[in-house]
Image (cartoon, rainbow, N blue to C red; front, side):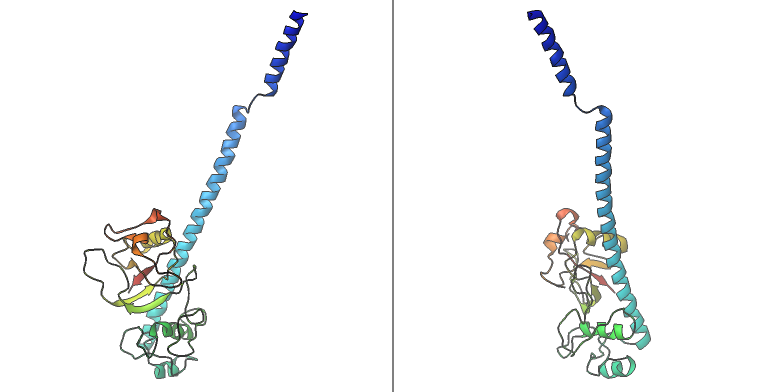
Length: 246
C-alpha cells in the first residue's frame, strides 16, 4: 500500500505541474507584439498632435504677416497706426475714431491702442478671417478685438523690444514684431523655431518673448537658456512664448 500511495502521489504532482505550466514562448511573443503596437500607436498619436500644433502656430503667424504686408501695400500705411479719418474713408465699417497717429509705429500712444486697432483694420479690410472690432480706440485686449493662439492666449502686433537676445549681446532694439502669445509648451516653441528660423531663442527672426498674452507671463529661466542659445525642450514648461521679428 505504501508503494501504491507513492505512485499516486508522483502521478498527482505531475498532473498539478502540467496544470500550472506558464505561457508558451509563442504566447509571450504575441503579447509583446501587441504591447509594442499599442505603445507605438500612442507615441505616433502624440507625435501627430505635436506636429499639428506646430503647423497651426506657424500657419497663424504666416497668415498675420501676410495680412500686415498686404495692408501696408494697399494703404501705404500700417494697420492700427493708420489715421482714423482715412481708415473710415477707405476701410468698410471702421469708425473715424478708430485709428492711430500715422507715425509709422504700431504702439500704445495713450490716445489709442494701435496694436489692438490693427486687428480691426486688417479684418475689416479683408486681410484676416474673422471679425475683430474695437468699441473705442482705448479698449483693452479682449476676444472680440484680438485673435488668440490655440492655447487661448492673445497675439500682439506691435513696435517694441520685448523679445530676447543672447546674453552678452547688445540690448534688443525696438522693431515691429508679432507675439505668439504665451501658454505655449516649450517643445512646440522649439520645433517652430527649428522650422522657421535657426532654433536659437535669442537670435534670428523668431525669439523667446515674455509678452503676457493671458494668465502668467513666461520666464526665460524656465523656457530658454539665453547664454547657450537653446530652448529648454525637456523642462516640460507649458507657459512659453515668442516673437516673430519683421
